[in-house]
Image (cartoon, rainbow, N blue to C red; front, top):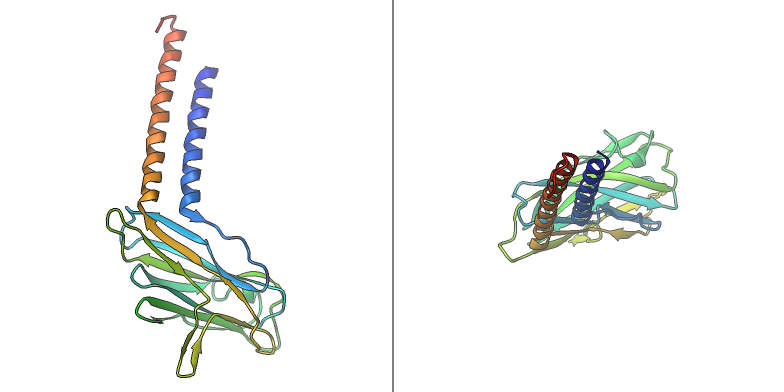
Length: 235
């Protein structure tokens, strides 16, 4: 009986390790950047080549500030040939976590074309009245993306989702920024997300499934031998 339980525990452990390894490969979570900064999490989205067109995933925009702030804006760019932004919203309902209990002036997201390759999401939030958000690490927004293309066999699709690209045409500037209570720009560093679809992740998935199947077969074989032994038969 104890040998049966040990065999089952071993198989469950192997299966969990395989699945954990696969999940770590597919989504790599970013670490908080030093103040003052703005970044997206996870910092890597790695999908396998069997991912269907129409598959959706979310990114979260964070900030880490050592000074007080009054307003923020994201100008998030991505490869329009790979992805399409299908939604953008605050992280705490009608406002962001950054806003806390302060009154705000909410905005609606704007979607557009940056150039022939990139599209953008423009979104932001401002406090109202004589208030400010104290220094700290906060979430700002969640952006949802839809996969619009997958690579042909043997090829890879790879691009970046970025916060640090600036749009400037005829004196009109769009950029990711955070303003202090005096409405002056806070100097920021930025972090983005690497996006990739390739066959290696497919191989990882198939390997995980194969190893899981092998572990199940080994478990059945070991249980069979245990049963034979307990019945007093040789094998």
